[in-house]
Image (tube, rainbow, N blue to C red; front, top):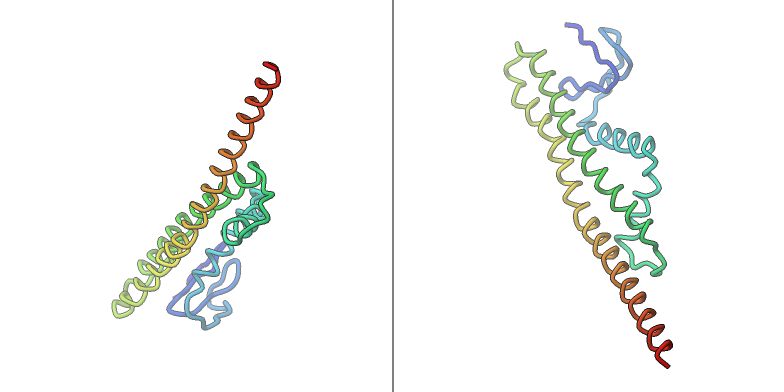
Length: 171
């Protein structure tokens, strides 16, 4: 039986087939599940193409560690947008990898004994993507709270400056 794998890694019962298009002569490497690597490659590629890779790195710096307090509104907004983009990419990548594994099941339908294994590996990609999304949610809410606090501080600062200027005009 010959399989054709294009544009992506293909998994066939714990065998990873590398290459643009392979048939019988493909290179098989035994590995558990490379769905995480495929999802990470998709996230990295899209973030790099969209120009949000640095902002996603800044999201970790701003969201997880107590910063120096000098972050700007624009920097926080871009970090929040990068985290939202990664969440959307992970949902799409998990669905794509599940679809890819389900097509592998349809290709090898004559091997009914391996359907359970293939279904379990197919559902691993959306499960891992959901786990990463769950880890990103607190970071996103922390960034949103920092943005809200920064905007409120600036609003209070502008109001106090306006109050001081009106007091100075009255004197």
